[in-house]
Image 1 (cartoon, rainbow, N blue to C red):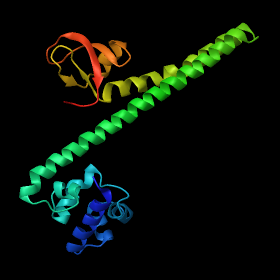
Image 2: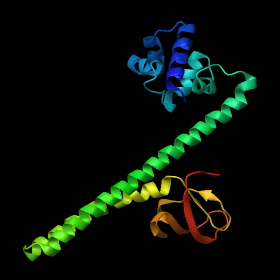
Image 3: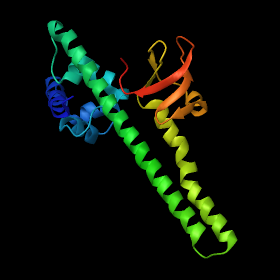
Image 4: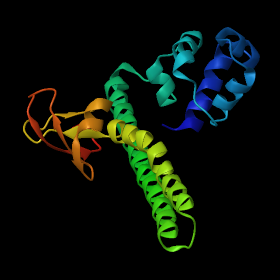
Length: 203
């Protein structure tokens, strides 16, 4: 989606309705600064106000996201392109989340390894060794639930039996045996247990 194009389109539609930025903002219960950010392409309208914005400007959501009035003939083609863009955006966001997960995991393991090595080889009291080892494990324990949440929500898992792709529950991911990004889980469609690999696309 071209935010600058969408912003210009919002400005044009607002002027066609003889509304100032302030008047449009008041009707949407937001600030005129938010409207200004939309029109300059610095941000997009939230989903909470999108329908009201389209109603006030007398356009469709498809028009808004396309940055132009879409004719009936072009409607299906634009719809398909918007869906493709949304899927690509999700895939990129999921890739970024998985990269963050790897980075956080490596950092936590690095801290843990460094502190355990210091506790093992440096001269110090026994109680201090125990404290250092516990501190070393702490970042990993704190980060683990967030990393697991990323594993659950980023992308999909593909059943090896029926090839259905789905987002499992947090509990299923937590309880599953795993090797890297492959987990042994029960498919919600065929109900068979198999080693299911992580994939980024739905189909």
